[in-house]
Length: 353
Ligand SMILES: Nc1nc2c(ncn2[C@@H]2O[C@H](COP(=O)(O)OP(=O)(O)OP(=O)(O)O)[C@@H](O)[C@H]2O)c(=O)[nH]1
Ligand SMILES: [Zn+2]
Image 1 (cartoon, rainbow, N blue to C red):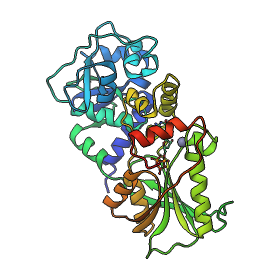
Image 2: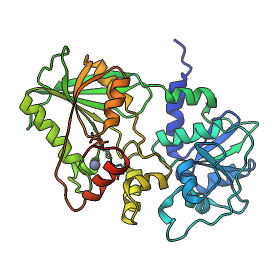
Image 3: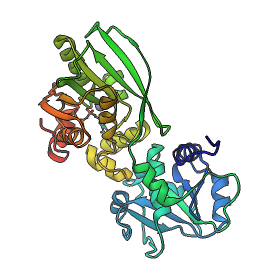
Image 4: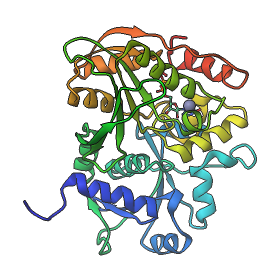
C-alpha cells in the first residue's frame, strides 16, 4: 500500500485544517472557514485576489442575499471589509442588535463546486457554514489540496464503521450490559452501542437511536427531552432483559455543541429551534441517519422495534437495510422549559407527540 493519503484521509486532514484556522486548496480556489480565520491570515489571503464569502441558502434568506446557486450564495467581499464584517455575515448573534445592511453584491457566473465543498467541510468540522474563497491560479505550498467534485462525492458517501473495543458494563437500569465502541473510517466522531442482555439476531430487537445531548443527557437540562428519553429507553430495555441503545455522537442534531449553544442563544432572543438552526445557516437537522443503520448491520441486527417519535428515523432505517417491525413511542414529561420545544418538533419536524 502506498503512503500517499487517500481522498478520505485528505478530507479528514482538511477538516482539521479548517478547525485550526488554516485554509485549504479546493480545485483552484483557496478556502478558509470564517469562524477560525485570524486577522493576520486574512490580510495575507486578501492580498491574493478578489474574495467572495460563500454562505448557505438558509443564512442567505435571513440576510436577504440573492441565491443564484441553489443551496448556497456568494457575496463579494467589499475591499474595506475586515474580519468583523465577515463574522457578522457568518454569525447571526448580532442580527437583531446590529443588522447587516446590504446591498450585497452576488456574482452569478462561474463554478461553485469549490465553494460547496468548502461549506460541506466547514459543516463537518462543526464550524459555522461560511467560507472565504479566493481564486489562486498558483496555490501556495504546504496547504491541503482537494478536487471539488471527488471531495463532494466522497463526503456524501456512507462512512464505514469498525468495531474497536467492547466490554461488560453493568448499569443501574440493566446489570447485564456491554458497551461497544465503533470508529468511522473518515476521522469523524466515534459512536457507541449499549447492548443489553443477549438479544437474538433472528428477531426484531428493542432499539433506540439516541443522538448525543450533553446538556440533556449529562447536565439534566430542562430545555429538551433527551435525558429523560435516554433513561426511559435504558429502563425499558432493562425491564425487557434485552435491547440495543446506540449513542450517536451527533450533538445538536449534528451541528455540534458550540453551534447548539449559538442556537440556544438565538432561542433566548425568541427564535424557535428550527428558526435558530436556519439563521445559523444549517438545515433543521444535519444528522447523518445512515450511521445508526450501519452500526446495527455491523452488530448483526436486521430488524428492530424502534423507540422513537421521529418518523424520519423509521424511514431512514428502512431505506438502509434495517426493517422496523414496530415503532415504540417514547413520551417523556413536559415542563415549562421544554413544552414550546416539543410543540415545534411536532409542528415543524413531523414528530408524533
Ligand atoms: N440544533 C439543536 N439541537 C438540539 C436542540 N435541542 C436538542 N437538540 C439535539 O437534538 C437531538 C435530539 O435527538 P433525539 O432525541 O435522538 O432525536 P429526535 O429527532 O428528537 O427523535 P426521537 O427519537 O423521537 O427522540 C440531540 O442531538 C440534541 O442535542 C436545539 O434546540 N437545537
Ligand atoms: Zn437534548
